[in-house]
Structure formats: C-alpha cells, structure tokens
Amino acid sequence: MFLKDYWYVAAWDYEISDKPLGRTVLGEPIVLYRKADGSPVALQDRCPHRQAPLSMGKVIGDELQCGYHGLRFNCEGACTAVPSQTRIPPNAKVKTYPVVERYRWIWIWMGDPAKADSSLITDYHWLESPEWRAKGDVIHVRCNWQLIIDNLLDLSHLAFVHTSTIGNIAVAAPSEFKVERKMESVTITLWMLDAPPPPSFLRTGRFPNHVNVDRWLITDYTPPGFVRINSGATEAGTGAPQGKRIGGVGFRNLDAITPETERTTHYFWAQAHDFAVNDPETTERVFLQVREAFLEDTAILEAQQKLIDLDPGAPIIHLAADAGGVEARRIVERLLKAQNNNTTPVGSTAIKAHV
Image (cartoon, rainbow, N blue to C red):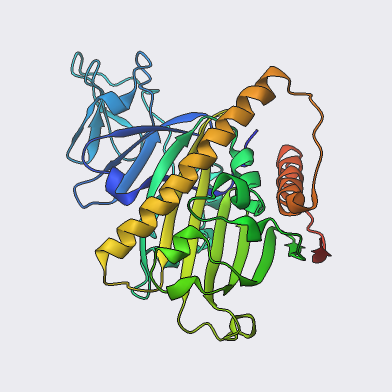
C-alpha cells in the first residue's frame, strides 16, 4: 500500500533524454522522456495494443513510438498513428502523469492529477545552491521502502555499520537526543560534544592533529519518503551549539525514497558540502565516502528484507534510538488510513519527546 497524492522523485535530470527510460514507481510501470523543448513527459509504460513496454520504443518529435507495432502516442497519452491501418481505435490511449523538473530531480505525481500542486514539492535547494556543492546517485535496493526510512532515522547504527566512513563510537554512546513530531514531520536532533571526529570528517583536512569536535546531526523527515540530514562539526568549544559554526565542515545529506514495489525501492540521494565548493576533487571525495556508507546500508537492508520475508510475523523490539523511525511509521499509517477512508487526515498537536 502506497501514499498516492504526493510528489515522488522518478529520476535524476541527467537520466532523462530523447531516449525513453522505463521505471516502475509505486508498482506502476512508467516511461519518461524529453520533448524537443527539453521538458519531461511521463506516460504509462504499457502499449494498449499488446502490452509491450513503450520504453522499448523511440521518441519521434514530441511523441513516443511503440517498438513492437509502431503505434505512436502524444504527450497527452492519445494514440496519433497506427501504421497498419488508418483508423485509430478510440480506446488507444495511455495514462499520463504530472511531472515537474526541480532541484535536478524529475518529480512525478502518482495520485489524482487535479491535486498535483507543484508548491508541495519538498525543498531540496541545496542540490543547486551556489553556496553548496552536491553530487548524488540512485541505488536500487531490494527491500521495502520503510526499512530505508527506519535506517536513515536511526543514528545509532552509524557506530557499527559505518566505522570506516561516517560513523564512530561517539554516535552510539548514551546521550540525550530530541525527537520532535509534528503533524506530518519528525525531527531528530543529536549533539556530540567534545568527541573525536569520524573518519570522513578527518579526510577533509579541516581538523588537524585529530582535535576533538562538537558535532551535530539534525534529521528531518516528511512523508512519504523524504529525509534531509544537517550534519557537521567545528573544533570543540568554539560555540557550535550556540550557532557559531565558523570553520569546520557542514553537510546536507539529501534523500528521496521512492517505492518501486512492496519489496524494492529507488533510493535517490545526494551529499552537499559547504566548504571547498569550487574544488571538484573535494566534491568527488565526499560523494564516494557517502556512497560507500550507503552501500554498507544496502547490504544490511537487503539482508533484513530476506529474513522478514521468511517470517513476516516475527516479533521485534524497539530501543530508544528507534523513536524517530517509530514516529515516522505512525505518520504514514495515519495517512494511509485516511487515504483508504477517503478522508482528510487529522493531525495531532506537536509532540516533543526526549529519549
């Protein structure tokens, strides 16, 4: 079951061209391509003639030609030509989807087209801000999309899964972190004061002699699958908790989790940095470090899914560090219930939980 009336990321901008791209989103086959003016188009990836994928065809002008029998469809999904006959069947049409290109991503609306308001697209301006440099990728993960949200909202696993990249034992040390849930968002704030920097921070060269740092991790979640992580560090005792974040390093980890099926997910992500923004080598190094960390996560997530599939009813326990993920699942559960009942969800008042 998926939330339909939301924008989802369907592709990176560089993935879409005048060659059709097939991609499954929320269990629906989609074909994406660009018109002659460069604007993106999304159609159902299924020819109504013999159910062949339109993504195996080719773009002709602004239209898409099926690679099986040559039927052509315009951007509105209407068939405009049938090479083998002059008459076009009245039901020769395919479903269309609203699409918007923003923040270097192609966004698709999978629900009621009348509700597709582009102002509802989640803010990821760091992807194209001149004050930041960002590079990202998409990873195909063989697990349910909510397992990835659980992972991103669980900070404690960094100390064990990512010891060579973005984590160290300081993240898992007993500490007071704050989980704040509002109507449709969860924010998790964690400070690690006077702690050793993780390996990825040391590789930036901005913490000579391995000085201790004041490090922050502030994670924002909004449904269905959007996570933005504000992280960074400055030398310990220089005032970072009070807002004096001069020097040091600042990052934005930007994640858009798009379900492919109930058991597979498109994991769109990027890492932005606010230092050495004109140095491509720094951007590449930051990208590769985070990509390595996410591939470490992928191995865990896919192993989880295999065990869940073997025994879906197996009991699980929750730890304090799971609070953010638990709150995120409650939000999705409430929204799905409202969707199934065709009602507007009633939001709870803001809740602050200190765990």
